[in-house]
Image (tube, rainbow, N blue to C red):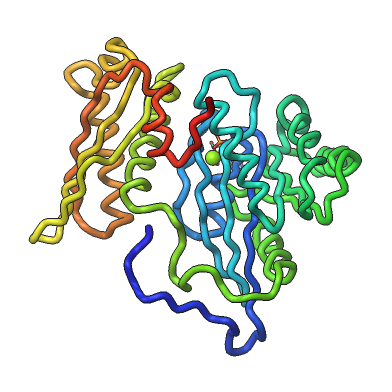
Length: 313
Ligand SMILES: Nc1nc2c(ncn2[C@@H]2O[C@H](COP(=O)(O)OP(=O)(O)OP(=O)(O)O)[C@@H](O)[C@H]2O)c(=O)[nH]1
Ligand SMILES: [Mg+2]
């Protein structure tokens, strides 16, 4: 959503004194609700969400203003035990996000607690020096007593400066987090123009939106075997835009499933994506999706660059 325009970066706000600003990394196990929370804080969809694990693949920045502060949230890929090369790049990118931040926000799914991946992340966080806050998410799913026990157990492992309990889905508790961040982040000028909400170029966000529809629609290994790139973007005189995207899959059989019988699956993915894109862009969208088999895209450095990931050797 980067647009060419004059940058106006305020250093004080009229009624609330000096501005504050900083980077906050959202770290946590996959599926904890990091992207949902980021979108909630920003007030718009900048990072895609699905019920499946490993939805986010690279760091996405979402920018929120609250009181006199500009808070740059870094949504990171969920941290899990990596198997493939792409997994490794995702997990490295998540920890990289943590190193770049002024403050770390560990997000835990309160229903799942701190077993498995969450436990390993708590261990890993011991090596990270920045202040850390704990956010227990999905409180709409658990009993209050269980929440308190979970908060105590996590704080026993790491000294969090603060613990919050939220529901990213219904917004409960989220303003308290913003209030806290706005006053805790260092004083300083804002990093981005006031109306910018993400640093993701529109072409890339558009590819992500299509990938989200793919995640929602396809099953088993297919979402993980696929990757979307925007190839063409053509603004037309009538105010509409023509977007061409390629969905890469690894095998011919996956291409067949992605297309579906008589092309019905790809049609459904395309129309869901087109609908959302025209809402975001506020203009009619003509979306053309092509499915290509590229056996080793998961080992192709160029694809990693497109995703904003370092290629692990
Ligand atoms: N009930 C409930 N569900 C939630 C809440 N927050 C997120 N979810 C759901 O949890 C699932 C995962 O959400 P995401 O935001 O994609 O999670 P993530 O941590 O970004 O996941 P990865 O990108 O895969 O690491 C989605 O189905 C969300 O709708 C919440 O507060 N309550
Ligand atoms: Mg995510």
